[in-house]
Amino acid sequence: MKSLLGKLNREHSLELEEYQLLIENINPDLMKLAAEYAVKYQKEYYGNKVFIRGLVEFTNYCKNDCFYCGIRRDNRECERYRLRMDDIISCADEGYKLGFRTVVLQGGEDLAFKDQDICNIIKGIKAAHPDMVVTLSIGERDHDSYQAYFDAGADRYLLRHETANPELYARLHPGEMSFLHRMNCLQDLKNIGYQVGAGFMVQSPGQTARDLAMDLKFIEEFKPDMCGIGPFISHKDTPFAKEKSGTLEMTLFLLSLLRIIYPQMLIPATTALGTIDPRGREKGILAGANVVMPNLSPTSVRKMYTLYDNKICTGEEAAECINCLKGRVSSVGYEIVEDAGDRVGFYK
Ligand code: 5AD
Ligand code: FES
Image 1 (cartoon, helix red, strand yellow):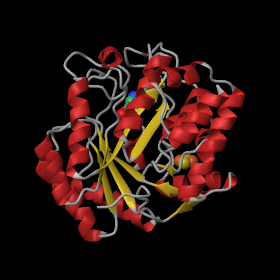
Image 2: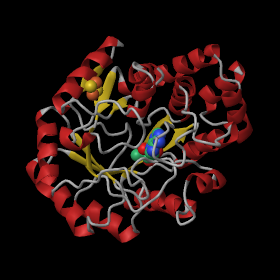
Image 3: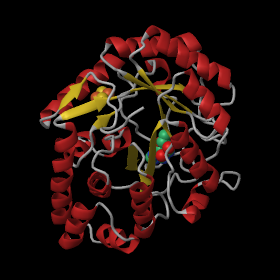
Image 4: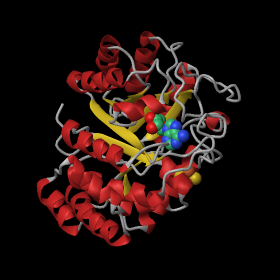
């Protein structure tokens, strides 16, 4: 297995079967070697810098019904909210004061926010803070909408592919959702000129080593600017309430493999990783991640944006989270920087 990892380190590419073998044979020695290779690239391109993104979860209404997600349409237990435009902009203002130069506007697929509304929010933030990067994470929309947001000033877009295997996709989502449509959205976003974030859940129900190998192959070929991964974590009011969560070890191993596959990629240590292990995010950085995404949403709504059970940071103010994270990041020898944090090599 170590020679396979050596091959990946030299060629940044493996056959699907080879990725699968690595995943099936995960062990502490292999994880350690993968993390060594990964950190070498992380340091080469990003030094000991960790980028921050301020996450504003502005609506938990969602027209979709993904089986794993706590804000799915059919979850009647979920108390719904929508932030008003000026509240969203105030969150960005607060973020700016705290040193954030990227704000991520994330929400369920809420059609109450028309294209024009989204454009106005982007323009409002850009007018107040011309050097703030605006990232959208609002799901699948059509090409012209994506183009309109881009023209209004949006710079980046996060849309996890969730799984690169169409068959698994169909088992995680209701029939009305389409794998092809999602992949087309990612291609549209890239063509328009966004910095694009893809990503997948680790050990979602029914996921095999081959499925994860397909995710790695997809990332190797699609080369998104960012790839966000986190363990699947069950949510009590979803069809997957009784399913096992993903593990820390597999998530860390995959973080390292992703860094080796595409050394310059932006890779977050996610909130889900921090949820399954109290030092999950620190361990993620030591495995090769270089981004953290603390929450800027008003504390009054945080508990309502519950994608999975036991989500961390739902009681803390933005300032508390950023201070907490500064301490955590420096405890492992890295440093949070006040920087928009583009992918190395990205040109507009
Ligand atoms: N466990 C882990 N991650 C989840 N997401 C949604 N529900 C869950 C869950 N139960 C992830 C999805 C989505 C992102 C916003 O959160 O990958 O794209
Ligand atoms: Fe939110 Fe630590 S990051 S409390």
